Image (cartoon, rainbow, N blue to C red; front, side, top):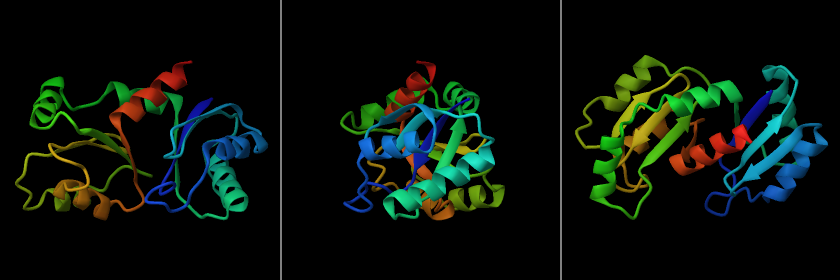
Length: 183
């Protein structure tokens, strides 16, 4: 089975600096096959026959041992990733409107969560929010469209606070990982 591993909090703001060639080396040392990394934010596409619970533990402990960093890793198998990619609930029209607001920024993001999001947390995120940004709930993901920088978005701040163990990727990265899974 093909998987995507998404690491949280590496190579962000100069913290937890991990070189992707070393991350690839770790995955090969752990016995995984067809290992490919993508950009410095900690994305790995690979093959494994292990069941997901064992796979997660092996990667988490291997990363801790190899790099000395205890970080979160979120896994999606090929089928899950294809579904989340193909079922993007943000319309092309909505994306175009955000791009018109500022064409110099990334606007579409995906928050990868460990589990199905708690509906109370979703309600809290929206409570009193009155700006243009859009959030839509997937299976174990939150799709997010912002009209300004994600760094200044109040909705993004609320999402991160509600789901602190999530990891976020822009849609260009999601698209590239989707393409890598199909190779």
